[in-house]
Amino acid sequence: MRFARLSVLLIAASFAVPSTHADDATKPFFTLHDLGSGVWAAVAVPGSGAGSNAGFIIGEDGVVVVDTFQSAAAAAQLLSAIRERTNLPIRFVVNTHYHLDHVAGNGVFHDAGARIVAQRNVRAWERTENLKFFGANPPADKKAWVESLVVPDLVYGDSIDLFLGSRRILVRFMRGHTGGDSVVAVPDAEVVFTGDLFWNETLPNTIDADTAAWVTTDERLASEYPQASFVPGHGEVGKSQDVTAFRQYLQSLRQDVAAARKRDYKADALAEEVKKNLAPRYEHWALYTHFIDPNIRQMDEELAGTKRRPVPSP
Ligand SMILES: [Zn+2]
Image 1: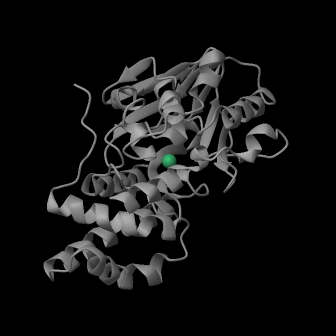
Image 2: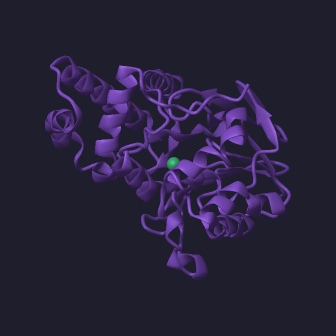
């Protein structure tokens, strides 16, 4: 378990380590990608401390922001980038899920007047479940920081639509990654922000995952939006075939772990056996060395029925 936590902590981020970039406004946390029709993806610069991707949608009478990175400094840079393009009010922020690397900049946008919108489990878990990324006994400063994060002030169960004038933005609860994930679709621009339900050529964080549900979600996304641009939680902007490739990774992981379990492999031997199959196909993906061992162990727990997942808000 100790190794597991460290792995997750390392990826869930450099937020544990003060980013030198935080004090250097000239260093970019992200690169902006113009997806057309006022829709922008902010793709994290690896190692910058941004932690994840984000983005924004400019409508007739306001702006919707999707995710807020893992620090106020990165969020402030995103707010500046928006202000270079429009003076319309930031009406809403959508948090795609509760993980720190998607919510820790909420305060910047709250102070700018935005409502923070999310599936209701995000509000329930943001200040509690995020503590696990710092181990069993989080340092006092980290604990205080997590417990002071700005939480969503507008929550929904299954779906909510946001309107920026006539522009309709669909926010939909979809299962798989944490149990509280939202997909944000902009149909008139053919753009879908998936949060961490899609990692482009990147191994995912599966600490809270229900991978059977996740596979179904990704099948649905690729078939519902065959022509869309998909902004993943991590990695570059992709197309439906990239969502499919990611879904196939999850399926391979499930199948290979199930097969090794059936042949009675356990623990490290099971991991080595599974990696024989997965490494040749996925070693070149980002975060492979970070996540392959936790992915296998968490899949083993999921298939054994012993995996701990966060409990949904009533
Ligand atoms: Zn993430």
